[in-house]
Length: 304
Image (cartoon, rainbow, N blue to C red; front, side, top):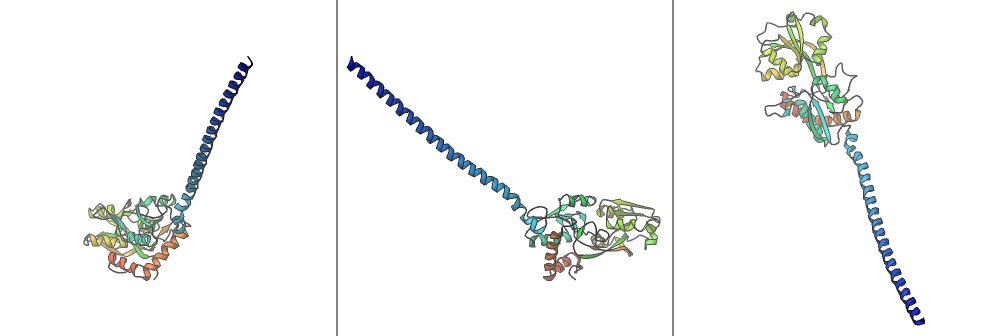
């Protein structure tokens, strides 16, 4: 009986030892898995933190160029222009944007190491486009006179006159002959502003009406729908050249003005960046070269 009891006790002790061994193994496995899980979580946390840091750094990196030059979009120079205002900005026979002002603007963008973007705009919406940040500037035969307080302007780069254009076979030879006639002008243009300030003259017109662009006005004049157009002399001269002298510019001017590049009020940084490049272009002959290509001579005034 005693032997039997000892055997039972030994058996029980062995069983307890086995159970204890199994329990220790499971605990070790569990601890190992926990350590692996902790390591993985640590790695994920580090990766997430790195991603968050990168995300926080990206906006700063994206604004580096904009901060340097005062542009609205990193790496780009977006120029607002009227695509129906030759020779300053228009669409050529290949459907490409071109023009004297665009040629200047593209050269400036290249030297600033920015992507040039020609952005056509509705002329009467130019202020909204500029204030909303859709464009960086207005560069398109943009008259400074009378707008000095509304924009930050570059130094003038061209002189211009507002004039009347009539058909070559017209009996209109002076402004006095416009009495009772139909005169057309582009909406929100310098010519319209000049005429609105000269009520003594406009009061003699039979009618003064506006159109969205000068291409439309030229077609109206060509078809005899109007008697005269009030417009920029530089634009008129280009149109006359392309139309083989079907039109004539009256000698008397409506007003005299200067063209400048219009930036959002207070954007001195971009203005200064552009003027620095224009100064380089004056000194190395690029301004003269581009002007001669478009007008046959250097008519620019910047830096002179």
